[in-house]
Length: 95
Length: 472
Image 1 (tube, rainbow over the protein chains, first blue to last red):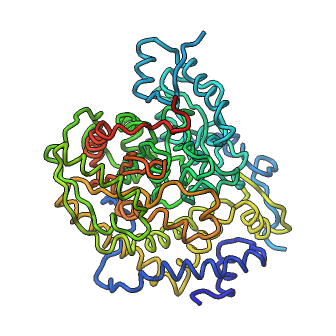
Image 2 (cartoon, rainbow over the protein chains, first blue to last red):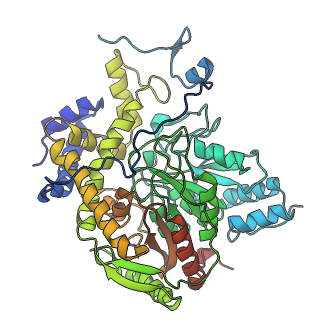
Image 3 (tube, rainbow over the protein chains, first blue to last red):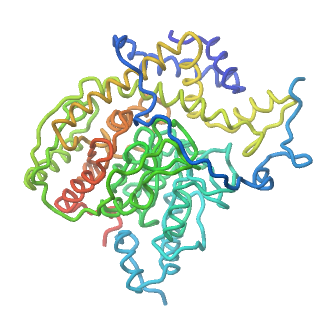
């Protein structure tokens, strides 16, 4: 087994996903199989190879510091699921 | 009475000619496509929404529904964004608008562009115009099927590991994944930021070049964009004299390539030689074996980070929860479909403490190897060719229950995506009555070479882009 049920639960907590038991049961063997397949990258000795994070050689891309309009408050709030007094409304942080 | 246009055959360049000569008005052209959508989209389901009337005196365009359009719902094929109406335009949508291209509608896709069949859309699958029991490919199946079915003269897609090229191959049209960084992603729903690219889906290579010239170039709103080193040229010539074409063995002999697909590609290469090209073999020893594993570590890792923004606070779906944490966790469980969840989980795991170096870190190094192999092959050759997809369009339902089988659909498109290289897919024949795509890969910023080679081959191949069941 490349991944256990406990590790799947741990990753779900890190990813803020309230997976159901049924989803955990299905995902555990699926992820196990996928990790087995992608895990072959470990076969290669790459100790001397530099990692690539981005395919273009762009370093320090600067732009002129020119002020421009930002979105209006109305636009920013236009898609909000819940509002109160012109602010995003969310449930209490801890309960 | 509006002039009758055959939207099944009309290319965008031809449509532009009709408009310029005043033979049809932009509004009449727009209506002709809406009529075609009325007639055929009930069966195919290419569009998630259509626009009745849009500004612009040019050739109308369909946009994949990851591209933010001000005032027009943009869902990324996900329930979590259902009802989301952007308050700003993405740069590509703005460029289409300022060029006068009216928006026809938003096309269906695998949820968050994750998939190879468009079956992962939360709003139901798109069907292949050649055979509606089969998939159109993915993730951009809606854009590809719409262009083939004459529901849009051209469209934009997005490509992370093959989402433009593979559906174009399966639907028998032209798809360009441009060089990473040449087209702005500002306002495009992000999947894997070191891989995502926007590109044209069209009926002809000239159409692809024209659309690319409209959308490409540096954007101050996307710091990962670069200026094009030379202007885009619409291809004209039919000779391939002096062009060196390399056939990477591993890309052309990979397990799972159907004999009919290999045959159509071989025919195209024989034609290329007749046109004057030199064709030779080359090797990408590790790019195919390790490309898919490398991609399915890097892309999910980046996706797990990009999709963290869907929290039910500022936009999109919100589930009820007695605390903030419960609300966010339930929103995400309720809003994301199976494939985004699978990839978020895979990516979160690959980035988590204790696994980062073995999975994500190692994959980033494999990516360097893959880039170097392509660079070496492209020192000997101007373009590399292979099938775009190992198979023709597969039946709906065939791979959806087996994630790994679905992931292998992109086996041949993934390596060059990891290397940041441009790729063009053109139709090169039929196998079992279904289109086969030929993939052309070039060095970074070599789009003009791909257009030249693609156009010359397209003229010689004379592939009929109209599905056989609709030919009269």
